[in-house]
Image (cartoon, rainbow, N blue to C red; front, side, top):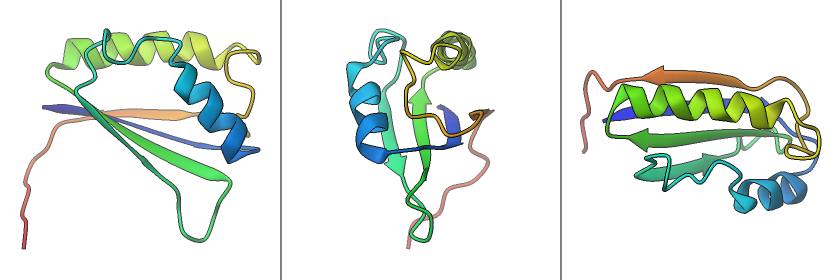
Length: 96
């Protein structure tokens, strides 16, 4: 499993979520198996999204497609700053 972590400031969660829900890159068709959206408890104008993929190739292709979306103010109307995308593989997982 490979995870893409995307982080960026937003201007409005409602506008951002509406754009996210429009799904301009077809998450499922792009190989996303699961995603989670996080917001820092002390910063409502910031989001973090974890998207899980089976392969690093799918993850890399997805990030490239998202860079095109982020370049369009119409497709990404609530961006409050440049997104940061990190592709990571788990090293260890422990549940208590």
